[in-house]
Image 1 (spheres, rainbow, N blue to C red):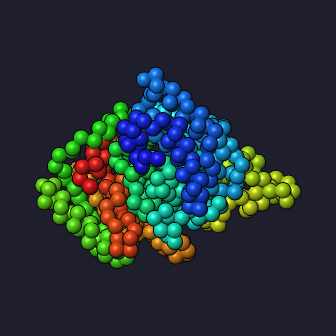
Image 2 (tube, protein in one colour):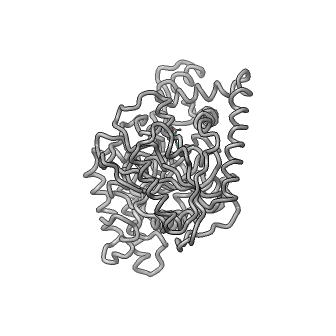
Image 3 (cartoon, rainbow, N blue to C red):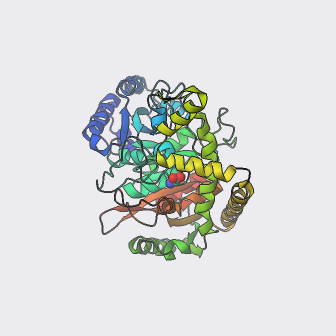
Length: 463
Ligand code: GLN
């Protein structure tokens, strides 16, 4: 089992079927991690055989030999998908997400669906209806969330690449906690068709991998306009070729180094990195995060509002779980939703319904939209002077299971990640160091919208 796709591609001796079999075996051996909700043995081996035939015929796609996992909120026709929720338990996808179609067309092999927080709501994977995921690097710690199983599937060397989704940090924070690369593209760069919606104006699909090269390979194969998602951009995709980006202008967030609650070792490491970049001739200057203390509240008002609307479709009639105790339509709705959704999802539906309600709409939802606009404008203005913004991905390394029980404390995990979702910018978390506690942590780089090629090139060469 090769660790990266690039190794798999160059290991000509390894057949696709052999490496897929090895991945499935390794997933079984690591069942205790609870990273996978299901392995797709049959379809994975069938696809492996097809890809192998194309390799032999000399017309294989760019991802031939890639072992891929998909988060359990991405649809794959004929396969179960549940968003790690009881309400969708047993539901089978009727169609494939565009990303799935594109990656299969590029000859990747999907080996299974990964555990996550229910409807991608969480920062620790402790909100899954199907149990916690263990951090492969330290089983007492969470893998991060909401794409915790995705991160674990890569960190445990089961999949070369995992697809996750990032609404407020759900790719980047677990990447930081598991020592992997986690990349959220620009809003509108990758199709959301076939992604179970959480907050539609924030959600983006993106990859986890061990290397920037593997990240770029998947990005190149899945980015671009999709007629089935009207929020995708028609702008041509600039492929990430990973050439050296030259000298860059990099801003870093003062608050990322000074804020209370920051782990001192993470701060010291970032400072050393900044010094190294300066010594290499890059311009590196401190700036302030726009409205830092307003970002998390703004995100949680808007994301819950959108979630309350998106999740209204799970009513016990059309999808998944229907209460057997209910009499009549009203009770079917009420009991099916009460039984089907977990506590965090209920909290968010209630909060989102409240901020959208007639008496509070202006005070919360409309106001948060205005604040979002200001944050977006500030963020984009920064890119008039700088190519990249550097910050920590998270304040600390992975925490222990059960360590954070207060929802607001959990929401503050997203302090440095929600800005990219509020502003729609691409952002990446790169493994940058190992703490004296033995755990990895990430550095986050953000670029202006649609500047993925430069962001990935800088990630490849500067970090
Ligand atoms: N932790 C954030 C939340 O719980 C982000 C989730 C995500 O990006 N899907 O909403």
